[in-house]
Image (tube, rainbow, N blue to C red; front, side, top):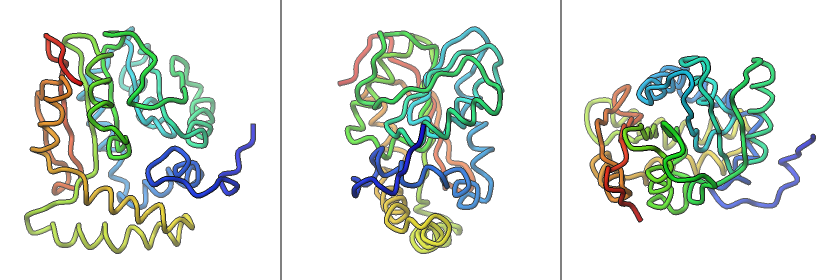
Length: 245
């Protein structure tokens, strides 16, 4: 199966089509832009999911399947379904799974706001660096609450622009100036990486995002800022009485 992202028309910022354009360089850029810290952040987020063998997990915005792979590394025997709106990203994810010889992971095209799964059908759900790109964010979070069984975990890992502290000015300079430049030089995608910077800047601060989780039917168990506040980790569980939108 071939896929030429360069033949695609101009895509909406944050859409699956936009990520099709950068799919081939996505993993490499993640390593470079995060100084390799994305691996440790991902491991920490998956650990918060409390993965276990024989349980079923949902990886939203799975991209090239790094989170799905980390789940089965931490819990051999677990089953994972990864959902992403970008065919290009899923192609790279399937290649990665095949190379690793991983079974128990299925990748499907889909959107967070409209999940084709029954209520309470997963032991946990996670979205890493993807909730910024969900057009209807409350609906996406409410879908997470709907498909996770009572007592299960819903985990969100997302980039954050520090708003205070000694590191904040340097982090803002890096995100606003360096990231778009590196995206242009290394991936030939200045427009896409300008969007990355803008979307991180516009993402709500942790206390406001926690309120979105509650409104969507998720009880926040804990939240923390990682590495001087450049990444936020939110761990929640569905309200016993349901809720959401």
